[in-house]
Length: 407
Image 1 (tube, rainbow, N blue to C red):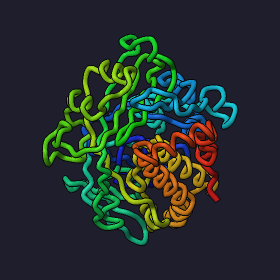
Image 2: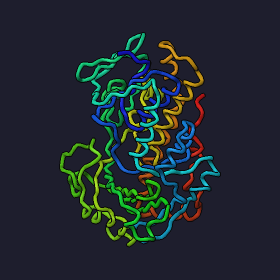
Image 3: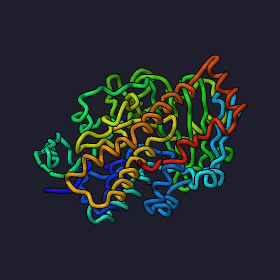
Image 4: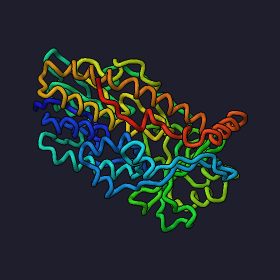
C-alpha cells in the first residue's frame, strides 16, 4: 500500500497534519492505534493564534457552532478570592489580533477536524493500527505495524503524542520528565452553577502549590474545570501506586482534591463541589527543544506533543500542534508540486521554522507553573507585578499574533 505521506496518530495534531496535506492534494495514510476515533480529555483554550489557523482552513463557522468565546481572563487568589489581574478577551482580542479567544471541549475540536479531513479525498484513515517501526531509504519510508501490515510513502509525520514510537526511533529512547503535578479534570452544566460562577470568563485561581482554571465550553452550556496540585498518583490522590502514567483517566475522589485545596475561597469551593465526577492525570513533559534535528530528520518529522509536549500553564498544547500543521500547509502551498526527492528539504525547512517558537512556548509553560504555584516572597512579587502592570503582564503579543510565516 503506497501513499505520498504517512501520518501516525489521529489526535488533534495528526488530523491537522492530514488536513494540511490533503489541502495540497497529497495522498495521506493516517494510522491511529485506537479502535475508534475520538479524543480523551476535557476542555482546552485556543488563543487567537490557533483560531487563525482554523479560520485559514475555512473552519470558523464550525468553531462557532461548538465553542464559547469568553469575555475576559480573570486571575484570583485561591484563598482570599481577591482579583489579582484581568485580561480583556472577546472584542478586545478580536480587535488586537484579528481573531477571538475560544474555549471548547477537546472532543469537539477533534470532531471538527475529523469532519474536515473526511471531506478530503486523498486522506485514508485506518484504526487499530499500532506502529512497530519504520525503515527509511533514499527513495522513501516503509512503516510496519505490529500485525506486520506495511505501508510505503515518501515521508512520515509522527503525531503520536508524548509517548511517541516514531520519536523513540528517530531520536532514541528518552524518558519523559515528571512534573510532580497532578491535574483533576471535571465538567459541570452551567445551569447547575450558582449565578456568580456562570459568567462567560476564564477564571484562574492561584494558590501555593496549586491552581484551578475554569471556563465555558459547548457554547457556554457547560464549564470545564481543571485543578492542578502537587502530588503523586496513588499517594493521597486517587489512582493506585504504580499506576500507568500514560492514562488520562485515573479515578479521582473529590475529598482528595478538597484536602489539597485547603482553606480555599467559597466561590472556588462551590465550583469544585458542583462537579459530579473527577478524573486524574499525571502531568509529564520533555525538556524544551534544542534544535531543528528534534523536529525532523531526513524523511521523518515530529509534530505536536511528539516533538514538544507542553505543560498546560500557557494553554498552548493544541495551538502549537495546529501551528505545526499550518506551517506545513504554508510550505506545501509555496512549493507547489512535491516529489520524493523534495520531502527531506521541505521537512528541514519545517523544522527550522518551528523549533525555536515551540521551545519558547515549552519554556514559558514550565515557568508559568512555578509562578502560578508560588508561595512566600515570590507569590507577593507576582501579585505586586500583576497589580502594577495589569493587562501588559497577562497578554502575549509574541504568541497571539502568530503563527509566523515560515521563511
